[in-house]
Length: 339
Image (cartoon, rainbow, N blue to C red):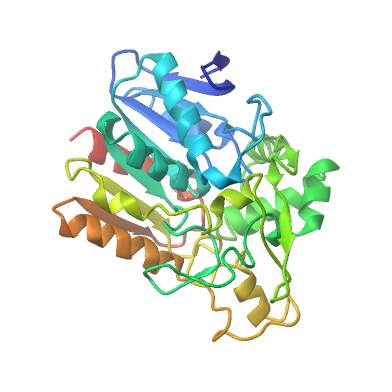
């Protein structure tokens, strides 16, 4: 496992590299509040099978701290990944994206499908963004972006990042990234928390800005920073259904995921229903987003055109199935990309 900085045409990107030269290529893209360190153990399992690179997305890890233009949706990330592939001389490869990274790789698949030998979506962002939509077709709540983006993040989380509060993020890691009572050994736990704490905060970084509005919960998405890229005002990945049908798609999710779910605990509608966010106007005004149903709806459209996709549900698994079941996860990747 090597860590290095690679200067691309867009950004100086930190990456982890592992594997076998000449083997099929695989790029692994992490999610929100994480970094490429979350893939180290999986990459070691796959080292004999693939030539791999795992980048730190902008705003995360050790990659150059350049701000994000949220009005481009996830295109800053997609363009950064393309620039990395160009710099590496990679013309075709498998692409894995986890959580927000799943959205980034869907955008890449829309932008550069000719480069992909397979697409793996692990607990991916729904194709219509995060929150602010209803029904499987992604009907947008008005005003667009309400309850989404930078304002939806608890300020205590940002403060904890700035203060490097390790114990809080150890708790978050155990309760949100995996399904309790799964636990990490102390060395792995420290390594992963280190990766979380490298998140850059601020208006153009994490979580991004917010715009006040009169309707509950009192804000809508701003135009800069990580979380605003996920607003349905800027994020629409439904064109993944039009991807060339020769690209196989594997959708892996945990049955106990509380982050990307129908009724996510990060959706303010869910928190409003639970009384955690006061003043909730009711599900008829602001319903929880059916994230899984939206992903399935778009992938079924892809299948209807002749595309090949498979949904695999890991039992007793949370948001990070590759952390909980690395051997099974590695086998699923091999079966998709090597057979």
